[in-house]
Image 1 (cartoon, rainbow, N blue to C red):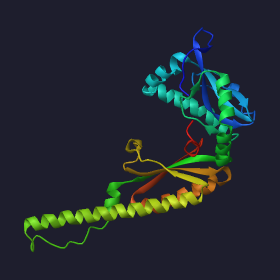
Image 2 (image 1 turned 90 degrees about the vertical axis):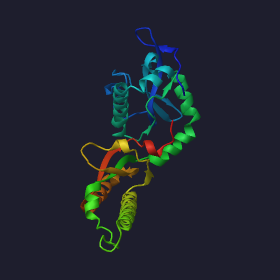
Image 3 (image 1 turned 180 degrees about the horizontal axis):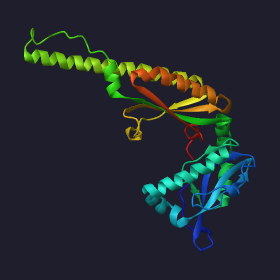
Image 4 (image 1 turned 180 degrees about the vertical axis):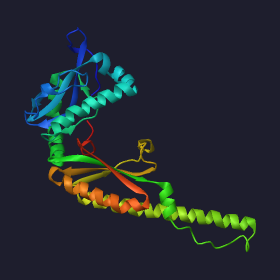
Amino acid sequence: MAATAGVGADPSGGATLVYLYGFVEGGDAGPDLRELKDVTGGAGVRLLTAEGLGALVSDVPASDFDAASLARNLNQLGWLAATARAHEGVLDRVLAEQDVVPVRIGTVYLSDAEVREALEREREALGRAFDRVRGACEWGVKLFVDRQASEADTPPAETTATASTSSPGAAYLTRRREERETEDRRRSELAVSVEQAHEALRRAATDARVLPVRRGELPEEYPGDLAFTAAYLVGRGAEETFREAADDLTRTLGPSGMALTVSGPWPPYNFVDPA
């Protein structure tokens, strides 16, 4: 719901809005919420309840979180990074003790009453979301390819013409064709490796989502191309099995110039409907 200023007030007299982090089941968030830092750096996280569900919220200044301010602040990397860390900090702390249905950064309401109305209105949808993620967390996997190592491991295509038997033009065309064939073969082999890796990880999870590959996500410490990224919903009792499957793949794919990175556990963003 888009935020507008004008409801609530902070101690300095400014208007406030209600910032939403996510939902829990029942009337207890697990940890002492007073110990958690909210997105403003304060200790204002609290729990609103209705319909047997709870909403993790805090009061935030409208001057930073109304619609116009959010549009501006979300484009400021420093503000975005600090707010995202605080948002994740709240969810991670609660997730350590119970299931969470997260919402995206920057979700705000006008008042506590509106949050409770949302709990009542979305009760069935939230119930389905909890049924889907109960007892599980999200793990992220990225597959990288070191192109130089991959090329060194790929045998060159068999030459069908040489300079001694072909004109320079024919030799050039043959060489270009062979390069295309080698690249096509490399891509085909990569596709097979990606599919096999995904299937091995999916068997260790309860659900999986293949995500768009964003080239800008490449970590500086790995000199390769991002070839595949996915999220896996993994039961709390199956996390060791999932990590072992990822370790096995790392050993198998390593000689071919491929590497896996695994991150988690995270709140299950990719397995609940956007808020």
